[in-house]
Length: 251
Length: 259
Image (cartoon, rainbow over all chains, first blue to last red; front, side, top):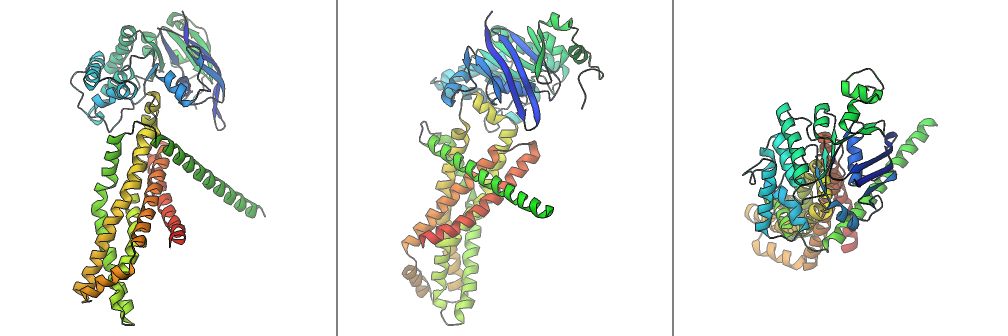
C-alpha cells in the first residue's frame, strides 16, 4: 500500500502558542484516515497544512512524493487539483446558487461545455442524495444539506484526496449517521483517499480504516480501529471514555 | 521616565504597524495589477461590481451633490454680495464642484456605501472559510474577488463624480438664478469663462485615485479579517475610517500637484 500523503516533523506556532510540535504521519492511498483529538488541539491546523492553506514553521508535507511546503503558486495549484475539501461549515459561496457552487471548480479548472458541467453537477448532487436543488441559494439550506452540497462540490472534479474538516459537528444524530454513510459511500464509489478530522467517537470507528490521535502537537497513536480500541495509551483511553481525569487537561 | 519611555515605545509601535500596513496594501495593489492583466478577465464579476459600486450609488450621490451645490451657491451669494460680485457665484460653485467637492464627496459616499460593504462581504467570506475554499479549488481570490472590485472602484467613482458635478452645478443654478435672482446668462457665462476642461479632467483623475483607494482598502481590510462577527464589524469600521482619511490626505497632495 502506497502512502499518498506524508507529513514529516511538522511544527507550527501562533505567537507563543505551539500548536504542532513535530507531527509525523503517513496516509495510505484509497483509505479513510481519521485524525482525532480534543477541540482546539490543532487538528484543523494540521489539515490546512496538508493542502497548504497554512505554511509550517518547519517540517515537510509530501503529496504523491512532491514536497509542497516550498512550492510556488502555479505548482501548488496543480497539486491542489488532486484535492477536494469539505469545510466545517461547508464554506459555500453565499452569492451563488447550489448549482453554481458545485459547478465552480469545473468552470475554473476545465474547458467543459455548460451542458456537460450541468450533467456532472446533477450527478454529484445525486451522489450526495440531493435532487433538484440546483437553483436554491445556500441560505435556504439546512446545516446537513449545506454539508452535502459542500461534499458534492469537493468531489466535483473527481479528486484523488478529499479532506473532511469535522463533517458531523453541529448535526443531529440522524444527519450525523447520514453524513457518515455518505463519507463511506463516496470513498468507495470514487475510490478516494479520505482524511477526516473528528472528535465524535462513534463516527471515528464507523468511517475510519486508520485512526491517528493528535495530542499536544504530536501524533501519539496510530492504527486500525481495533488497535485503537485496544490501546492502553492513557491519552486515548481518556479520550474514548470521555473521562475528565487523565493526561488530557481541561483548560 | 518610565512613562515617557512607554509613550515613545507605543508611538514607535503604532508607526511601525502603520508602515507595515501601508506596505501590505501596496503589495496587494501590485498583486491586483499583475492579476488584472492575466486572462481570462471575470467580466461577469466586474459588471456585477460596477453595478453595485456605480448604479446603486447614484441616488445618494445625486442627493449629496445637489445639496452641496445649493449650499455653496447660498453661502457664496452672501459672501460675494458684500462686494457686489454675486455674478461669480456660478463659477465658484462649478469650480468647487469639479475640482474638489465632486470627487471628494462622491468618493466619501461610495466609501460609506460600497467600501464598507466590500470589507464586510470579504470579511465574512474570510471567517466562514469561503476564501480558503477558493484556494483549495485552485482559484486565486485576488483575481476572483479583489480585481473586479478595484476595477469597479476606479471606473465608477469618476462616472459618479461626473453626475455629482452636474447636479451640483444644477443645484447651484437653481439657488442662484431661481431663488436669489442672479442673471441666468451671467451665471452660465462666468462658469464657461472660468472653469477649464482641465479642472474637470483633474477632478476625474482624483476620483479615479480615490476609487482605487477605497476599493483597495475595503478589500484589504476584508481579506485580513479575523475573529468572527466582531472581527467583521471591526474590519468594516477600520476600512471606512482608513479609506476616508486616506482620501482626504491624498486629496491635498493631488491638489498640490495638479493645480
